[in-house]
Length: 226
Image 1: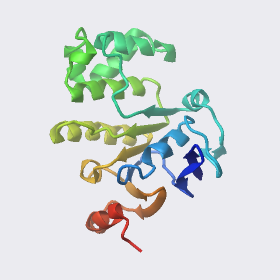
Image 2: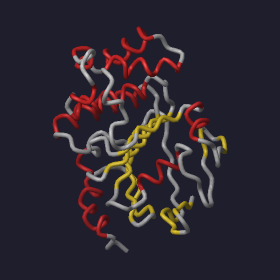
Image 3: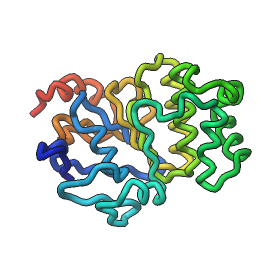
């Protein structure tokens, strides 16, 4: 597919597949087109050419609302919570999914027990990792078939990032297709099933997240591969 902004092409023939039950790590330097790829997948940004498919069905041109109804959940960079509300109130905002408050809380607190301890705390006063846990569990209340995560590790300590990605791996094992955008490969490659590297809007590598990819990442990020 191709996509861009104001006549400037950001994606040049990008073709990716995210399978149910797997984690695809989408890597690349700043400005490579990673976030644009996710926005196109979530119906937030239009394609200029090419097709978008969900479970084999052509949904090119789908709106973000219809994409969400189809089971696509995008958790963008920057947490995506209501900082002036308590943790519990943030969770209650998700009752539009048809779940009761009790069901939503049970789901959230079973995945991230720390959120139960913080239930009455204003969300914006929690640590960055706890805010990311809240954003993630809010998204999971929609029972997504496809989960799109943008820079989950942004501004977080390595131990916290590791815990978050352990949860992401668990989510994938439940049958969810997960596309993770990351600038820092070390944060995600240990738990990814597949990897792709975008450079200047083109897929320069796609394959297993093995040692050969790790060895080649510096060249890929610098765009110096053939």
